[in-house]
Image 1 (cartoon, rainbow, N blue to C red):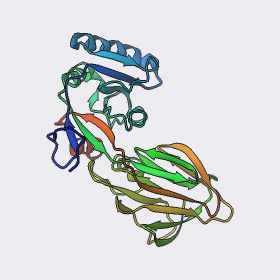
Image 2 (image 1 turned 60 degrees about the vertical axis):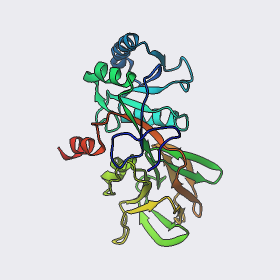
Image 3 (image 1 turned 180 degrees about the vertical axis):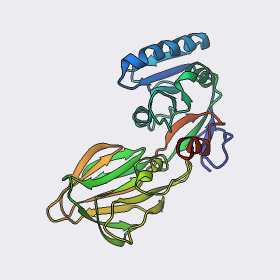
Length: 284
């Protein structure tokens, strides 16, 4: 089990976690629906005043010199915030104003009580594995997933893949997903990929609509990197990082994926375990 330097182990068994101190300064990250969020920001400001916490709202500061980031939004906004604060040591806490909200910790009706607990330091911080992606000179880090998919709607691609330098053959398919434990419950799950519990130091490789009986999802450890080549003569593949285009792969070009060195930091309450979230979101 690993922890951040100078940290203490939290109370969530099996997860790389650390406990938190009282918050003095917090960033606020919101989604793009101001008509919904405006009142929520005012509610959060009231809690912050009572707790003696300074708030840094989107656009008023770079937001990195803070103790925690409070997200008012859904999973998309959470991903944006986790990306934004990657490598800064700032954990991200979510109040769900979206639809699913798997990464968030409290419903918007619990904003006041949830924020008060965070400001008092009653949360723990979970380290979530990321993946690094390379396409030629382009590099990026994904919190959720890296996807290589056909750049032409309705056209299949042929992808050759290697794990740890060893070939696993050629797969005709619509694309492939390399998902972190965080992203394993998203696009990966909907394509029949395995769910990885938060805290696992691994990522999944899952093919999208493979035209093969032998293309099965694979869980890859830190000691192995994945290389995927586009072997389709006349169709390019597009590489997406957390849903955003990074580069195109012409025939013969490849994308490399490996576990990242910097974890994303998610602020949670000790009772809001991965399995509780999983049960409430997917099993009920």
